[in-house]
Image (tube, rainbow over all chains, first blue to last red; front, side):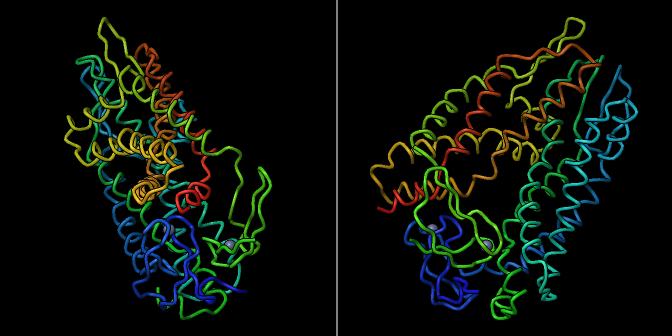
Length: 213
Length: 195
Ligand SMILES: [Zn+2]
Ligand SMILES: [Zn+2]
């Protein structure tokens, strides 16, 4: 199969222009004549950056799930809720649909995203030859779902601004939202830094491209 | 015929000129390479201008209003950010402000600026369109919309919630930004800016 890298081209990450790029992988490349972005045959230091961001994301999941994100005070009484206890409370109140949405956005999506990126990184580093097409589709899926994790933070910001009825009902936001927001931002950056072309380089035995990254 | 490389697997492909509404996919990994969109620039510009006009009422008027025992509270996008600051959650407040107000607004302005002058290409327009690409995926209006719906249902048992003019403007803003996203042919814009 004839890749741009082997033909001496590089695709601009920003505008998609095919640029002649004779520099070896990993070196500082030329600037795109169309949009002036730096052009690299592969995203620079992709494997290392994505590992660093993924591990940071996994570490930050602990405070994101352990600290309270929201406290609902009804007639002056109420306990702080974490993401998990909030979902349990929604189930007790019979709001199954919302419980499911919050579970998907706040638990399933970040966990699947971090596990998926780790799996893709390992598959490249172990030079897997098979299922490159399926892994590329998995990457596109991971990139697509990541942003939806912001859902709970937006819900909290609306509730906190709306429910300020002094003694009757009062909602405050907790420190867990900071950790969770950091997880979302970090995982979005991780997906951006990941270069799916490395999946194909590794599966076709293109060691040069993988090691340069 | 033009030569292009797949963004996801790097395979080189030669693509023939596309017919209207036709698209080309990578034969190795299936990624979308090109999509021909009809009258992309004028349609996207119309969506973006409509969106910019709706941006004002969507931010000024209350999105939801809560009424209980004679007390009243209303929520706007900015009030949600301020409430987070009141809770001393600075980082979350800044993040929410960027994702729901600043970035969608800047995206509209950049798009109108670039498309409105695309008949006179300049390095400045190319720089603006590059900025647009940079922030493109950080606008999160559609996620905020789902957040509004969830807040609406959650509050249903607590008090009476009234939807306001702000909500209808916000729905309009969401529709126009989806319209602009679907009709925008980035490659066509870049080719214009290059000539
Ligand atoms: Zn470029
Ligand atoms: Zn491909």
